[in-house]
Each structure stands twice: as C-alpha cells, then as structure tokens.
Amino acid sequence: MTMTSTADDARPTAADTAPNAPRLLLGHGRALTEHVSAHGPLPALTGPEIIARTEQAGLTGRGGAAFPTGRKLAAVARGAGRKGTVVVANGCEGEPASAKDRTLILNAPHLVLDGVQLAARAVGARQAHLCVHEDEHDIRNTLTAALAERATALPAEAPITLTLVPHRYVASEESALVRALNGGPSLPAHTPPRPFERGVGGRPTLVDNVETLAHLALIARHGSAWFRARGTATAPGTTLVTIGGAVRNPGVYEIPLGITGADLLALAGGAGAPLQAMLCGGYFGSWLPADTFAGTEISAPGLAAAGSAIGAGVFVALPRTSCALAETAKIAAYLAGQSARQCGPCLHGLPALAKALRELAASGGTRPAHNLQALMPYIERRGACRHPDGATRLIASALRAFPEEVRAHADRKRCPAVHRAEQRDPHQGRRYGT
Image 1 (cartoon, rainbow, N blue to C red):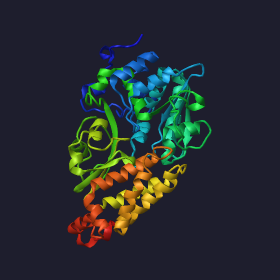
Image 2: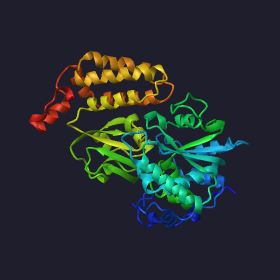
Image 3: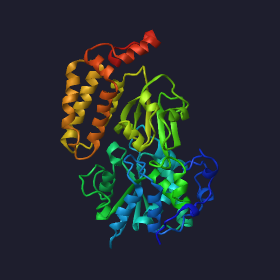
Image 4: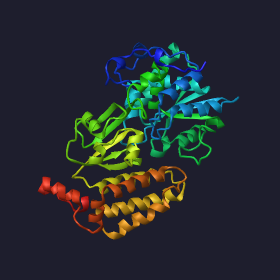
C-alpha cells in the first residue's frame, strides 16, 4: 500500500527535542549496536512506500545536482525488469575543498549503509556498490568493519560491494562510476543513455551521494513531516557543508537549509579577516561578493537566485588581501590537469583558459584578458561531459565578481588585493598578486 501520511509514523529522536541538534552527525559512535540504539532498526516499508515518503519529504541530492531523490528512485524502479536494477552509493569525494562525505562515513557508516539497503528495496535492486577512493584507507577500513558487523546481525537484502575508485576529480562523476563498474576506465561516458536508463551491466542504475542516502535512511524511519520540520518549504531538511578559507573555525557543519550566508559564517566562528568574496559550491562553483553572500539564502534555490550554486555544500572564504584572479587561476590549473582528456574542450581548451588566467594574474596585460573572453564560447557546453562547463562557470564568475581586479591586471596596474595587503602590512607588497 502506498503511504499517504507520515506524521503518525515519526519516531522520536534526539533531533526532535533540540531544534538545532544534528541529525546525521549525532556523535553516537560507529558500532552497529550504538547506531541501532540511536536510530532504531530498519523500518519495514515497501519499495513504493519508501519512494512516496521520500517524494513527500522533498529530499534532493546532496552530491551537487540537487535533483529530487524521490523522482530519481521512481525512474529507476520503473525500469526494473527481469535483470533487476543496481544501486551505486557515491562516497568518492572528488571535490578537494569538501570533507562532508568523509566526515559522514567515518562518524555514521551504518546510517549510510542503511540508506543503501533502503534505496535497493525502493528500486528493486539485487546488487549494490559503495564506491570510495582507493587511497582513503581510513574510510575503507571503517566501511569494511561496518559491513562485517552487519553480515552477522543484519542479512543484506541486496549485497553491498565496497568498490575502490582512483582518486581523480572526474572519477566520481556518475557515468564514470558506472563505466568503471562495467570494467572500463574511471572516466565520464557520453550520455545519453543516463545511468537510470542503462547503467551497470546494462541495468537501470541508481547513483546517489552517500549523504543523500543517509537522509533517506532517516526519512524512512521518521517520516516526511519530521524531515520538513527543518529547512524551508522549497528546500526542506538539513545538509552537511564544508566551510574553509578565512574563517576562524573551518570544518564540516550540519545546517538547516534556508539560513543566510551571515548565519553560516557565524557558525564557523566568523571571518578570520575582512572578506571580499565566498566561493560557493566548490571548484565547479561560483564566486559571490562577500556582501551579496551574507544576505543569500543557503539552499539550491537561494544560491541560484544569487547567480551561484550550493553544489556539494562547499564554501571557501576569500580575504580581501588575496588576489581573486590568482586564486581562481590555481583552481583552473588544477581542473585542467584533472580533465578526462577525451575531447577538444578538455584536452586543449581548459589548459589554454588556465594559461590565460595565470598570465593575467601574474603579468597582466590586455592580451590574456582578451584570450579569456575569446576562448570561453569555444569551451562552454561543447565537452563530452560537464567538466569543461564547471571550469568555465568558475572563471566566468571570477570575471563578474572581481571587475576591479580584472581591469587593474589588464592595465598592468597594482592589484587591488596587493594594495589592501600593503595597507595592513607594508612589508608584504607583491606585484599582480603572485
């Protein structure tokens, strides 16, 4: 029977008694007994009930795309046939500035594994994979121990295989995971078809971020009304965010969606120095001026309205004394080096963009500034995957957010950030922010 109401099914939790208490990171320990004591056993819901509850909760993906999870579950479930379906839990945190998935797995591995099992039940999967980076030994050991505990206490409805993936930026893209599980290289594949249509072994495949699945495990237990008690009507629930850069207490925080950028900075102890901007969404994200960020709602729709994105929940604070173009050039060079090298925009376009931005930041002049503007249209939306689009989005946001810096560098004048740094400390002046 499909569930139509969830309010009466909510099970009281510590999070119900304290408005700002964490849900995912309760700090109850890694052991299965401690996990069950804190959250209770897996609920006896049918697949359609899990999907209905997830749709009613309004859960969206926490891996970057913010796609409605209930709709994704339903699409995979509809494709189930004689071969069945597959679930792939994405625990590969390819974003260098992010630590949320790592923190979640190390602190609550059984919540993630519960989510994998419930997702498998929802879509009728006979097989599940949990993908992590091959060099993250502590994550690998934590999950191996958790799976061993469950093997004797909780018979798996869909056996979970721990799968190791190379630690590369593009290796965690969903089609790259499917391609690797099918015996190919860990590189993005041409789409369509999307994994939900034809993925691992040619079967409809659900690929979801581990945080998304952990939320699913709580929604299945406590109901959609419980989940919606935090957040906003258009962005319900909580989310994990990684805050870094010029803040007093960098780290991973669980926040209700809908708080402001100023609230987020306060959670991290406030700015450690006067800020000029915030990088929102990570290396595929966008720069927002500090004053704009302070009043922006931290949610997918809120950040989209400000011209940015929540992405994987990464926020990096840039002080006024750092050259924004130099910092963006470093990220652009990293992204160029991490590309799949499968198409012209990645193989040739991204290195050319990174070079132009580096030259503008280091030496200045109108030629690199012109090259940046001229190259962008030949790279945007022309790649075999979304990697070039993420890089160009970041660079374009820097050109929008820091027009004063762009003009100063193009005219070979002193970088405004260097001038600000010299005002604070006359001995640290640098030309063009290098």
